[in-house]
Amino acid sequence: MPNTSKQHSESDLDPNPNYTGRFAPSPSGQLHFGSLVTALASYLDAKHCHGRWLVRMEDIDEPRCIAGTDTAILHSLEAHGLQWDGEVMYQSQQHSRYQEVVNALLHHQQAYYCSCTRKMIKAMGGTYNGHCRDKGLTPSNDQLAIRLKLDTELAPFTDLIMGEVSAPHQKLAGHKVEKQRVEDITIKRRDQLFSYNLVVVLDDVFQGVTHVIRGCDLIDVTPLHRCVHQSLGYQPLEYGHVPVAAIAPGRKLSKQNHATPIDNTTALENIVRALHFLGFDEVKRQDFNSIDSLLSFAISLWNRKKVVKTPEIIVPQHESTYYSVP
Ligand code: GLU
Ligand code: ZN
Image 1 (cartoon, rainbow, N blue to C red):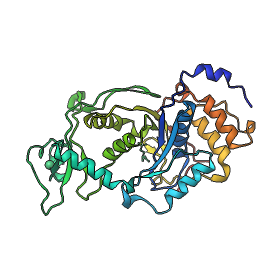
Image 2: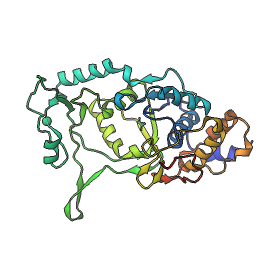
Image 3: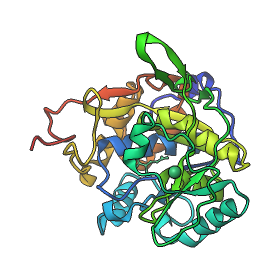
Image 4: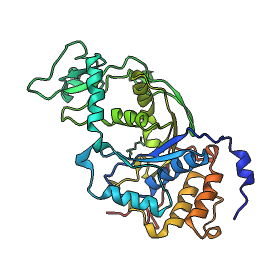
């Protein structure tokens, strides 16, 4: 077993018994190399800090979910030794809790009904301008969307891994940039689906999550999530984003991009590759004969400072273990 003492002294993370982290896959596709990287990073960060690691199935957008994918994901996590703490939470079973929050927000005039169509929002320049805020609309025959009043600004934040992240700006004509207005986001859609930007915040709070380690594809939406947290009166969380695996610039590995489901029979190799991807090149496959020994080594080795600070890394297709060409 390689010596870990040097790495220990390089990492400045103290054990934190209050730490709760989570992995929140959408069961719209099986675990692939990119989602394994995210799962592993959030697991290692939690376990390095002596914290809990939860799994939440983000099946809120039910039409996009595929039956049986949740069990396949859980099976893959187990095959890779990524054992979660407690019960797996399913968003599809939380509707009454979400509805209670929405009702309370409507009751306190923190949320309101909105009848604006996509076409109208396009005519506003693409950002919703608060058109229905003071209209006092009530649901009639038409299904209306529900929006959350947001009066705070998108603020920069310090990412646990990527460092300082500025709030998104709007590019105007003549290379001018201006602070992006936060629009009153939809929290329940016209088709009655609760929106992801609401439930992700509610669930993290409900599950007592303290640290969110996830892919850089969500780094731009984090200022908004922090803003929603704040406007609902919750304490902000810590966020850290790891590089996403992509097949070409801007095309992250995903079911749409023909990502191959991870092969559970090569779990050790997969974890070693995921560690290399994250920047831990010193891990050698031949030094380990079990997932448990590899994971305990990786837990002690984990160091946020060592994670590659690039939002996206292109993975090679040649071994055809990452994705297949259609
Ligand atoms: N369910 C999201 C996804 O699979 C992740 C959301 C999150 O980690 O906050 O992309
Ligand atoms: Zn409106």
